[in-house]
Structures are given as structure tokens and as C-alpha cells.
Picture: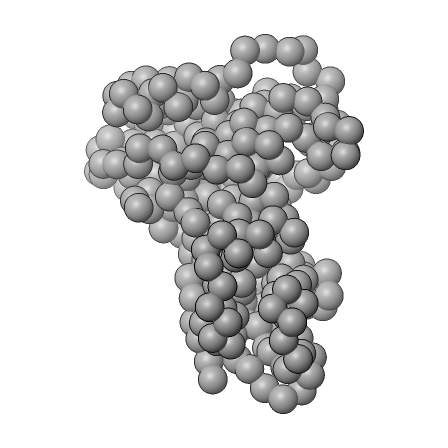
Length: 284
């Protein structure tokens, strides 16, 4: 049997790193939003007794290091299934090392897809529990939409949807960010008020000016990547209502109230940056 699923990217409308926890993780407050930029995941069961993976994107590991393989083994273990064979094929559109949760979303799709493939009837809460053991962003990627995520990122609260906008996402060609290095630099930042609180208020107000003027990311502040600043300026010069870096980088997003201006910005950036995309928010 074969199942195909779409695994959407996410952006961080706000991201505050509140401090390091005793368990080594970081306490976060972030507003995440899924967008209609997708990887395609195909799950095929077989009788090999192994989990295998293939991917068309250079640099993605196709062995036990891949988050999809980890998700599959965790699913078998959680459901106490006899381990049959599973092949996972990943067709990537979401850039890697970009802060767009491409890997986490792929892992989330594997959990959701295996629940269908093996008819295990896990509840949404049970799938979230499996996802949390794989990665902090995986529970959000299972649910999607517009969410306030706190703790290590896995505690979620639904927020009013971001509607009526177009989003341009651009990853600089020559910049990829190590998450470990990014957290080290964020840990050195001076303390500041939590911008995510303001983003939550802005979303409830449904005021686009408030939403776009409250975009904030501690990683962007700490890393100060020149290419990110250049792309942000290009987006704002193209009349984006607001722009910022997503996750630990290095992808940049701009939010537009005009589809025409979004398309013009997309075309201009695409000429120099192949990994540029025109998207819309996924509304629950």
C-alpha cells in the first residue's frame, strides 16, 4: 500500500529565546505559521523488516540520521507493532538549514501517514506525543495553522489565523545556519521584553499593521547575517508590510497585502536566489 502526504513549511512570526533550561533545552515563546510550501512524502509498506528512505535533495541523509526514519521507528515502538518494512520517499521543495522546519514537517507527515497506513487509530494527542519525542517542532507540524508555542516549542495554543496576505520566502544561496551555533550566540544576548506577547495581541486584534510591525526573532538579532539584512531590505523596498528571518535561519520572509507586489518581489529575488517562493498562510 502507498500513501502520499504534503508536509508544509512554517515561518516564525515571532521567536523569543527565554533562557536555557536545566535539561539543556531552551525555553521558547514563538508564534508559528504554516504556509503552502510543501515537501511530498510517500510511504510504501513492504515485507523487508527495515525502514529505508530516499530523497531528491543533495545533503539530506538517507539513513538512520534522517528524522523520518527516527519517526518511523518511534511509531512502531509506541504502537507495539511488529516491525514490518517501510520505505519513505521525500521530494523536497522546502530548503534545508533554513529555519522552515522542513525536516520536522517531514517527520510529522510520517507519523500521520503511518497512522493511516497501519490503521493504528492513534488520537491527535497520541500522535503529538510521538512527535514530541522526535523533535520540538514536530507537534506543531502535525497540527499546523497559527499557534503560540511555548516550553521547548511543543506546548501549543491556537491563535486567530493570519489571513488575506501573500508571503515571499527567500533563502540566501550561500548561507546555512548551525542551530547549535545559533543558540550559543542567542545565549549571549542581553535580556529584553518578550515580543511574542505583543504578536499574540496583534493577531487577536486582526490589525495587519500591528502584526507586521511586531515581527521579531532573537536568532536574527544575535546572528546579524548580512545576506539576511540585504534580502529584508529588498522585501521592504518592494512594499512588504513587514519582514524577518524564520527560526534559526537563514530563510527570510516578507508579508505583503498586495498580491501584485508580492509577485514582483518574488520575481526580483528569484533572479539572484533560486530558493525563493511565493506562498500563502495555511488557514485552519
